Length: 106
Image (cartoon, rainbow, N blue to C red; front, side):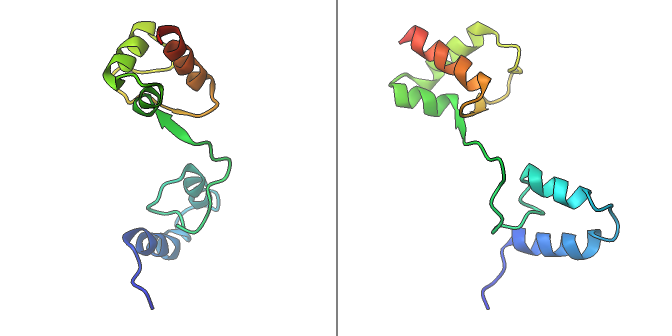
């Protein structure tokens, strides 16, 4: 039998020890959020949208990531908080904003 990973051991422990302590919706809700400490590794995430970063977008366009982030900061988007990564779901309105900035400057 193969050794279990830390995430698998944590999942087993959580299911055995927390299922009686929490109501029926807490553990499934935590799983849906994608926390690996209590989610089963074999379960696919539902409603999953791929995530991209400013660095990935800049590199694909042939722009320095630092320069792209500077352009993004200059736009002062209301959805982005200072000192947080520029990480968005592909296809989201935020992703569209980032694409627009990239297209306007290249």
